[in-house]
Length: 151
Image (cartoon, rainbow, N blue to C red; front, side, top):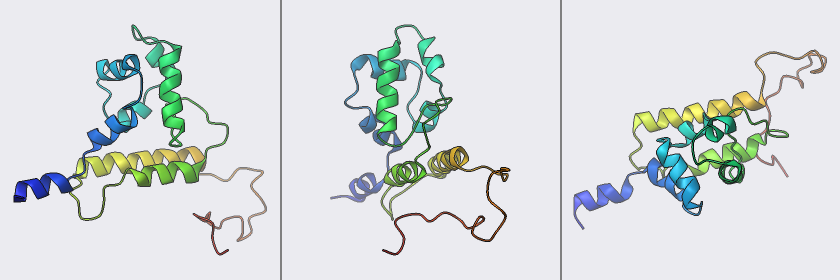
């Protein structure tokens, strides 16, 4: 095994991750993504269902398939309101996209990942306190726990 073989084996390939996510999608759906030059999750999540439906040869079945694949990972197309954002599932899905520690992860790809994380958090949390959000006690401002906590 040469050094280039080792380097190739330890590099994280976000394109391969995206391709793996849609590997079992129908040919029509995969082609619609390809024709729109959508090859990363950030590009996909920025699209609305309406934008897909305005494309030639893209129908409701393709959009529904894309939404189903994304929802299985806790992700949604732009403009699609989930019944209640499952922040934990979305964050866990994002963490599954991380390359193994020690692998090469280009700065640009890290930036895309962080942007997705921020988008997920923005869906779940407001920057301002709503009038119904409690009485201002320390408990009201405590950050949410990630995971199950002490059991």
